[in-house]
Length: 626
Image 1 (cartoon, helix red, strand yellow):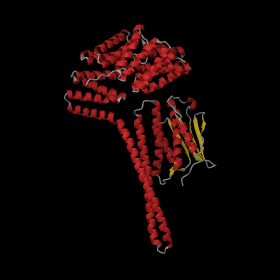
Image 2 (image 1 turned 180 degrees about the vertical axis):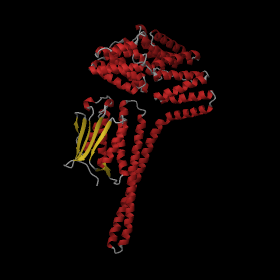
Image 3 (image 1 turned 45 degrees about the vertical axis):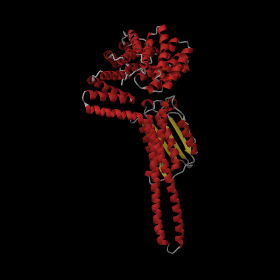
């Protein structure tokens, strides 16, 4: 089986012009001495352009410096430009979620300023993130949106690159003929306008498409053309992309020595720039090529290095094939024990990918079935208990009249106590099972969150998990306590606070929770909505009140006032509502949930937003446990 790790996904998001004769370190020293004004902001932005093709870590360093200075100077026109570049840096270093966050900020900024051209550029970058995450429909939508803007502006260069991006997405949808058609449209415009840099990108896309169609000669011709252009422009990093794709074409043509030369040069360029996606692709391709040539001794180190890079990237879809190649290499050098080990890992990883979603669904259905069975059993037992209690009381009344009732009544009272103990045990078991079912649901939500890349969906799932755990903690306290209808709120809220601190993985000592709690024991019908309200308020503070590692205090107060009302206060000394980060993905579901649950207990939330953020609610409808 032949494999070729194409890196069309690694579409470069920013292609700034630069001279290879630049001396970036000397420029950096000069720029550092400039006064803190907008000129320095612009120079830092330009310096990041230079480092883009030399060192992505240094590029990020100067982007951060320029962005912070722009914020300090309140130079808002620069914000979306830095958001765009920082997002691109995150994309090129393999952090798509953070990239999407900054692209969203940039999109908002350009929409507000009416800068349509830069807005179209950001849309093409968002299409890259969704392409990388595998949401090809969303990626195609953003690419066509960008194309519409470029056509409206009569921007031929922008239109050409949008055609190329659309071709790239169609390639990943395995629509290779359509992909070649769109890439050719971009190629023709770029050829006519002399856009050598973008033309090289279209050459790579055309080469990748024709390789999959099966025209290897045409694929190699386009890759050679693109490589020549990038070398002419001294674009070393992009040349690495062309070399990797050129190696794929040569490998399919079985011109292995030439393919190896291309892959090794691509690998060296990726190492220089610390470009992880290209590094992983080139490493895998070198190992695979050595295996095809029967040089398993040389192939093995590359396969093992590729394994480490794949695990570091988190893209587990590539794991099974990597394990298969490692097993093949070990077998080729006679190390059959290691070959067997990795062949077994290959089978396990392959099965895991195929069955993960099915297993999650089956687990969900099994949980629903078992819950329904338990509920039916509990209903029957409760009916039996009610019938038995009726009989016992009737017999006890008759025997109380009779002279011989003493002995019989004593025996029946013993039986009644036994039944009560059984009932108590049954109710504890119910709470225990409910808590276990909620824990299973929480685990399923956690499992699902590991596969979610969208910020809004991931945040919603994590908040749902937090709410489930808050309810599960109530049932745990009920079956572990001495009173089956009573929740010790002091103990419960301490546990809830500790759980939320652990869930949000804040730095140790960053946030401290202070409790002011009366010794209250509440009925379960009051404790559950109250626990959910406190869960939402504390979660809100932990998410928004202490950005950037800020330290602070969070206070939870629960007491009865002189009028017999239950008073709740959750307050923090964080940045307040105006200082909190505003994310596009955020919703008002938590606020709505607090309002609904408060109404159930006849309470109205009162917000105080000064030095920090506080919510006060006085409840009239609550029930203390007896």
